[in-house]
Length: 286
Image 1 (spheres, rainbow, N blue to C red):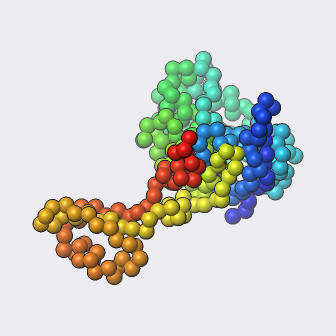
Image 2 (cartoon, one colour):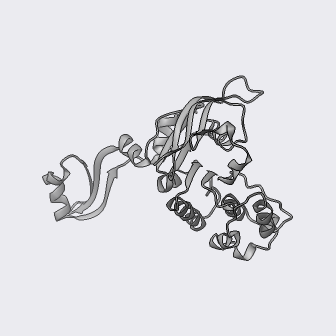
Image 3 (tube, rainbow, N blue to C red):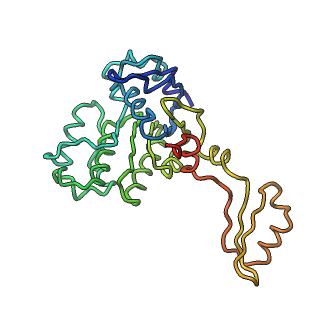
């Protein structure tokens, strides 16, 4: 993979703030990967995303997009990116079709938005005023808007928040399909299940600073316990024992249990991403 975004020592302070919101962060995003920027509210995630999509410009440090300084790109940059803000922005008096037609007029490339709305179970609402939409419908329409120009890069902020599990699954499948077709995704979310299902690599941000990139699987191994817990029934009823993963296949007690008794459950000592989030960001101390 090649580096798509290369962020070097990024510093940013809002005009009325007394301190920097971003304090010299550096990271890279590879082409064709789904990259997650995670952290508690106020850590600087949205600010970072706004800088990368050129909404905020008065930053210190360097950002390279496809090897070129982001500051040097003109409006053609927006042909490359699709953005899904956490709070959907639409014209409530216009229908879904009219909204998408209006936003599509900003771009040279266009996607078949009607077909995408149909995939997202919005077929019956295409000619309905968006003001009549539920929150979940607006979030799904927001995803359509992000995909309108058939972008190379998707910036998504809480893309499945407020959506039922079935429609959230559709959006996640569409994101994974976008990646399979060579797209790159930059995602911020508090839903760790989305992170685990989607992200190739993540970085945790705390108080305007970031840690090292890692794959969710590697984080779970790093912070997890190398143990297996077995629940089984013997003559005395339900029992529970833990075993070290090391040489588990040669552990006579473990092998005796799984061969002789009715097994109820077997669980590894894997730590959840929610627990890792709290450990890494110190969110439990807030």
